Image (cartoon, rainbow, N blue to C red; front, side):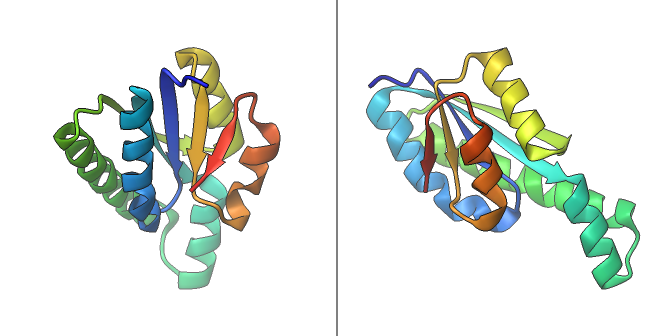
Length: 131
């Protein structure tokens, strides 16, 4: 199986530890790595209720952490010769991921295996690899 374009989906800055596996997979298959950090609107609302902080303040903090994660992954990928494309979106993960799969002709989807990503396994139109 050949994967020319692979998308790594992150929804939390702590997901970053899966980047090495994603980079090695892309290096092995000579794939371009699209890295997509999604700020889930429902997660922001839930955090705001639990922490009594403003939604916009939390969204901005997570956005900053998301860009930091993206840049760290880009640096690591660059050192191994893997080409990357960085993206950050706000919204519903399944909707955004399917939009990217169609728009960029993605061949495989990489996600961290956790409860929140179960919907991505079900809704994806391309193979999903849980890391």
